[in-house]
Image 1 (tube, rainbow, N blue to C red):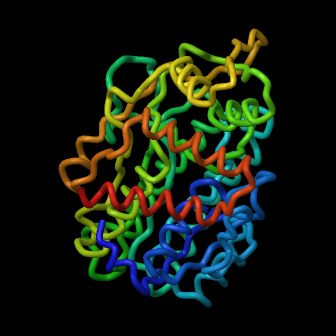
Image 2: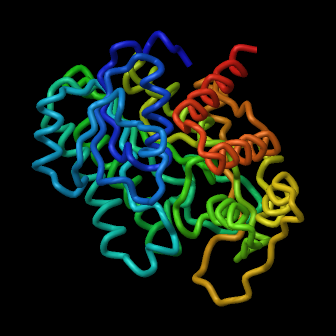
Length: 358
């Protein structure tokens, strides 16, 4: 990652009020980028966006990704050079009860971003952040590569597969390699594993559920203790996105297409392992219990093959899972102790950057 690259770059982040969007906004502020955020208000209370005062240091615009006209107006006014599209309905269980909202946000929201870029001047890089759940999950032990079929059992996963197909269609129809000199826009999609870190309060996610329970001195209830996920600290895929944007800027359509960003294979662990490790770190005789209620289907086994990013982007994970969980507990302890969470979060970014220089 080239920190100097981002100085004064004009960047639009959709979904900047969310968990990943807030971390990315703080990191790019630190790099000196000129950032505009376009998003609905923070989706949770509390939120990292508000706790870390993320809006201080960027232009924050309240807007719905489903509102094409407003989005086009914002892009025309602020003239971003790089767009990182993160605005989404991001919860599997929520999607079962709200499929129309999920599809309209994740599919038509993606169409709107692509259409706005097609109608604009000045955008050179567009990265659409989708999900590892976009793949047709066959519950096999092998890792999924970027050329595996799209699919999805639930509305959320399916919507992310659709977003991938929409992006691919726009890339081939309007931003093709053959006509790059005419449009000068490089378009890519990224698929990350289960992203974790401090500042996540989304409902029905493992880490927030566990940390909320521990802070309230009650045992977390775990739905699928045997499910295996590719866990990774939020800064790992964000570094991948930024590294990809740099390459798209420098080399155009050569890096267009889909990219996986996941942890090393040994950090794909069962949910029970995560729960054991976090309760042990928390101490105070913390323990977890299995939730015996009936729940909607969720994938039980999913891993990503990141050979492409490792080979072509020279990106690889730096934080092992144990260290990631230690950082998470430290972050939530600081929050529980009412510390300055912007300083805490920025210090974690700096600590991560220092690791990259070793």
